[in-house]
Length: 112
Length: 357
Image (cartoon, rainbow over all chains, first blue to last red; front, side, top):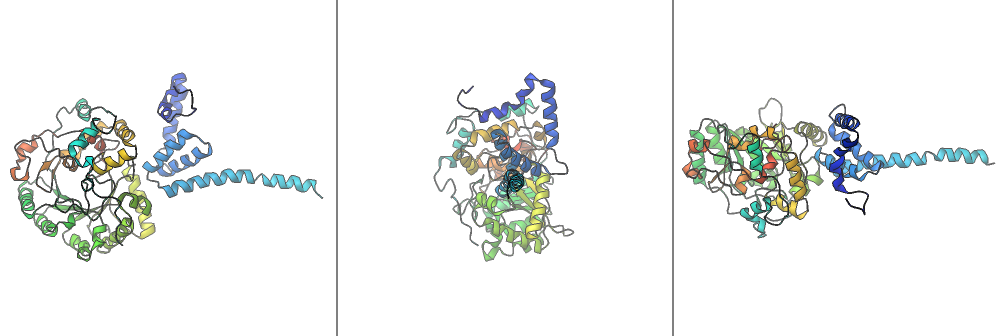
């Protein structure tokens, strides 16, 4: 085990091992996870693009590697993947800026 | 527009990988890469096939030449404009016709290349196969149709002989298509597809079949063929008003120029691992090597086009060439396996007709 880094790409393949210390919960999680990504009202490609956007929002390097590969495999291209990231980034920055209304309310209340 | 080639053939560049024996050494971890994987033949034996044998011969696949107007980065044939010598002669094609006529189980004549249309005997051969009542399939790279005036009437010629046109289009956008097949290929491909549509290909009620081939533009596996087909149909219709019948999702096998790409991009070990982990014994029953014979431009016989490109001839010592074609001996043969075969058994499997399982 490396002592010098928090993230090792090889650890992604060990994700399934989390069931070792809580078998029932781990199994439930992976069963549910599998169902979530099945084709439904959304296509698998669309779900993979959402996952990629969320991966960047939660800044999970494992998820970014996994869903960059998965998006390619599901037939998404660079343009679609980058657009998905801009959606994530827009919501993230918008969620900061929208507090500007609170700031403005506060400032207006205190000002003459 | 003219296609800008991104590379030359391995043989023109005198690369070590142009030597098929050297490629087999790489695939078995003896050259260039330090990566070993379980023997494919052992996996197949474990799945209940100690001797993988053919089913009745249905598809007679002929690689009529390596000459091509494109030099795609992933080409397993190492085809290109510099392959001027490796083209099937009229004499060898006549011998193929004799066999096609004599074997009633052969339903389909699958003509591939290179760009098969560049062989000077192509049209004559298609006409003769058509007279025999066989379904003729042409693996067309599309751009050849617009490459030169003498090919502009190919859509009409195909329609006249009810040729099933199977065309490569790795994606419905320029960037992913051109990165694999050369700058300018996407625009020419779209123009050619529109010309095929105009004579009835891919249109309901005409019976003229236009199928597309998707293979990934990189070191990843194809997704579900059904989902990709749905997306390709939607996007090509929306963007370019193009119709087609089916989409075949084909996995890139780690040989020839795709092997070169994998090694150069440091993806070889991960890609092989991906194939090994996705190994699906449920695909063995439907592997294309079981109902196909593949003939090379010089008349040698192989279990499939990929074995042909690795020069792994059929394991029938007395029937390895079209001049010594012995159906009985070939029906009893053991199919030759090697590490590249993992490409055909990964996930839903892969064949020249797309998914297997």
